[in-house]
Length: 280
Image (cartoon, one colour):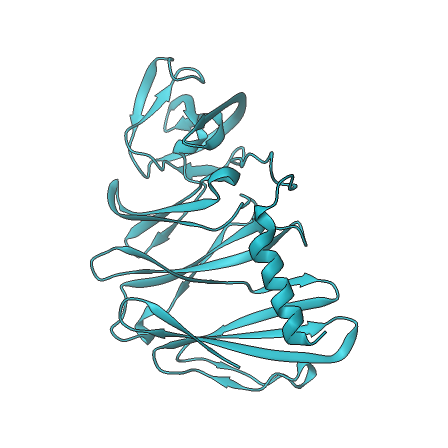
């Protein structure tokens, strides 16, 4: 099997494996980490005296407010097909209970604003993002990504000034997608912020994955960058292109040191979106 066919097989399995029943993630309920701090995803969230909706409200928490997770309770609640635990949390000097679906699973600062990320669970198979300034909502978006874990959140701020007209910001959100060929694989979604502060989901890419003996790895090359030649893996130099992100994918066979094939995709910036163009 050629390296290109190997790559296609990997990508097809990654894309379609989550649709089958009785997967290892079917009973998975994503959790918050005890003793870690999180931000409130909802608005005017009730901090309650106990872990149920009928309990007395101690305090109202605004969007973006910081809480510390003290303990996970045994109470699970499902709303809109999102299933999460109730948690005991601390907000400043107050201690109470909040349903996990009202707490962001990941957050990070973006210039003078904050990005809030929410995992909608294995049933919804989606991510929801909010861009806030203080406790004010500027924009929100959601998209389907497959069943994802809460284990490997990360982000990277990319140089938006390399594109014209420049988006206000450009970042990559990294998360772990459950998969049949491995426990899971890392995916990164690129998201831009428009001049009017709207979140725009762009494209996703997979830095690397394996279904032995077939494996693949990828690199992004931005306009001002150069990906150097690597003779060990027969990779040629790739120079950045104006207003374009290049994705170079290397497919190889771990049992055959001479098996190296490359495939390139280009994402051309049109001022609003990155339009994909594939080249061999």
